[in-house]
Amino acid sequence: MPAPTKSPTKHTLTTENIILNYILFFFVCAFIGWIWEVILFVFMTGNFVNRGVLHGPWLPIYGCGGLLIALCFERFKKHPVTVFLASAIGCGILEYFTGWYLETFKHLKWWDYTGQFLSLHGRICFTSILSFGLCGLAIVYFLYPFFTNLFNRLNLRPKKFLCLVLILVFLGDFIYSSDVPNTGEGITNEISTTSNIIVSQS
Image (cartoon, rainbow, N blue to C red):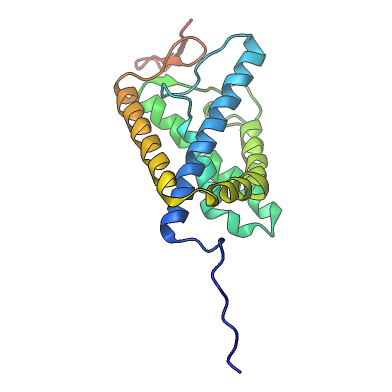
């Protein structure tokens, strides 16, 4: 008798669907990061501040970090220590060079860890690295599987439309914010280009 063939299941995804899932997951992480920063600032100061370089409710560095973990480290799911270390190192590098880029070309600091334990130029510190490792575990073992399963339930056409709208709005925000970044009290500190001194915008 011929061997039975496996029938396709709803879990079989096309390359297009996988790419769309990654796009949506980027925006989910970017939005969660924005919510986290806003809530943290409200808790610390009692004030609502639109955190981030862009003006919309998203922080691209969180989106890039979350997508980096999903793309590169999800394959190590059976090794949580590897996931933790790879996430901490990978996202730490991402945060450091993002901070360097913003300071160098925008002459502003959107975060500053100066004075914290194992701070490196105020761009990363031990606490941030530890947080990245823990977030990596949360993404690999909870967030990415949960949202991927959720995205898989969407029909292809509305999923493509949603991705297109998000990308267009994000690009508009990115282009506008390249010339007019989100700045101000509780958001940025200005860096003097002559003396390298950080001046608080208060």
